[in-house]
Length: 322
Image (cartoon, rainbow, N blue to C red):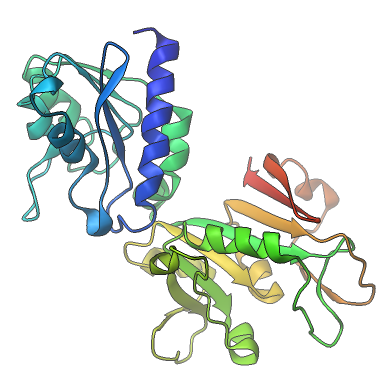
């Protein structure tokens, strides 16, 4: 296989891994493909609750045909035993595969290189081929392992003049149905969703996923507060306490302006999801209050546009921290 072909198959493995997002928690959502002579013989992705793992599913689907084939997997096969199943490195080592291509090394110290070495010790060729698609698909998991906190996405629905509501607080609806559906799809891809205490008290938001077939993917509900929270909610005392969100790989912040500013001031926002409606409000509530800048040059070079698309009459833009 050429380097280009390896990247293509790893991108396919990364794509199939997204079927496990976010139901694979607390495990990362991993994708695996078993390929021989350009044909896919088995495929798998991490199942709800974290088991079976992607490699186990792909090997079971391929059966004896896996012998002499290549396994493409988005994350290094795990090397640690679990009461819920065997280590994937051991399954792969006993599979008869000819080659394994890994798209992303696992920073978990229980695996971290040991999975690859265990497979090599069984006589199987292993190549670690860093894949941007695999790293992007595992961004939440990698953030949790490497930085001790989830990947944080901040969503803002804005008018053209940067308002999130009328002066009296009326905000339903700034954006149209297509943008709102897209936002629900984004909710379905995150482990947790958070609003500020003021938003919770004023709006009593449901924060669930209301797209047919995706209701089971509604994220955990969190509120930024040091006080008591209603049943079914979790409290986060401050943006600096993100490390306290056990097993949360990805957090979606949806309101309000003070909460958004607090996370931006703390420099813990990794992605901005902006939904812009083609309306002017004038004199409305601004999308962001002070975020701590003391000079204009501090605002430059912080964000890069990663995606842009039209959603009905609205515009969606995804920015990633540079």
